[in-house]
Length: 216
Image: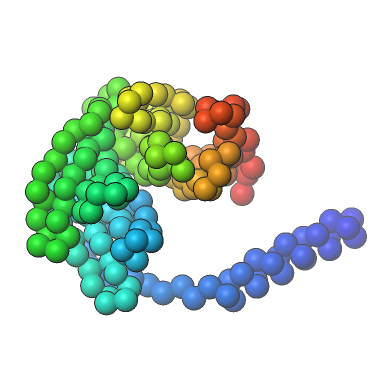
């Protein structure tokens, strides 16, 4: 009992110390209905994110405090990720489409859009959140598109331009919190409605085991 007590105090102390080190500030962006998919781009030193219901793409540059935004159309947009080596080119999730978009962030115009692939999901679903791993492989999840969220209606996918879409997990409610380290050995993942953080390990670039969940 004493050991567990000391361990709990040590963990709590670490959390408190971390909270004291981090300065959390509210980003003043008006009119966001459902923010999602924050992605920090090191090269441009900018934060990209989306308003799903906007549907709107955002670019925020802290150094200048400049915010640039543009609507993508009428379908909900679930994420935005810059394409490596191609200025102002991004992969976004529109409804169930994985779309390559050329968004000129200087003139704030959409130059072109190309649907790369479409997820094999019912029209009642949409993409929610995505991240790329160190090899450039895209990981993304789906969920019910609407206020009445259906339990287990979504799935979790990987995508490469060469290999296309591959379903990795099923019976997902809300995909969220995807994070990948640079060594590509594992990544973290959340199904929000399960109140659990999952970790996926890889072997030779392939998923080796299912989610190892720890509740919170």
